[in-house]
Length: 226
Image (tube, rainbow, N blue to C red):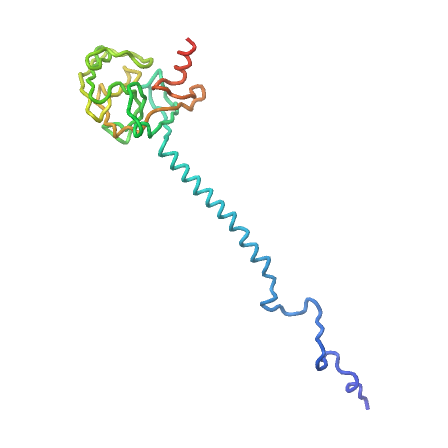
């Protein structure tokens, strides 16, 4: 009688109290034994990058809007400010100039055209609030006194006025007097339509420089050389 089964237990059946041996790779994974460390650490790794990117974008937008509240670029269109400023020239405007200070004669300003506020004009301030302006044969008289020109201009021969400027208005003329639509044709500019004062020319490069007292940089350089 073969009693091998009673002497030698079946190797596939563990004996009572005996530890079970398992071949590596054959155990069914339990939820607690899943390798979640790598996948969980990969997701937080992107969060600092995304946060930094979002902060950079927000900061850039804030700086952009802050700059836009102070300065604005403007492209000259037309010949009305020749020979001081030229068609296609790019300028920077200080929008806080007249919020922090007063307008001065000779300043070059950009403003919304009173008869069509959707259009922006560039002209030179000739008359200030309360003054009486008259143009005789192209010559500007302020309160009856002939006033020398504040910049190089193309002279005209028209007559206009006299015009008394209101308390919150400006009288402006283009430097190219014969070819400029300005106060001699349509009246004064309310100061609330003024966008700002021209302070810098930045394009083309040959015209780069600060605009001081309404005088473009190339004119300042030429007067210094003389």
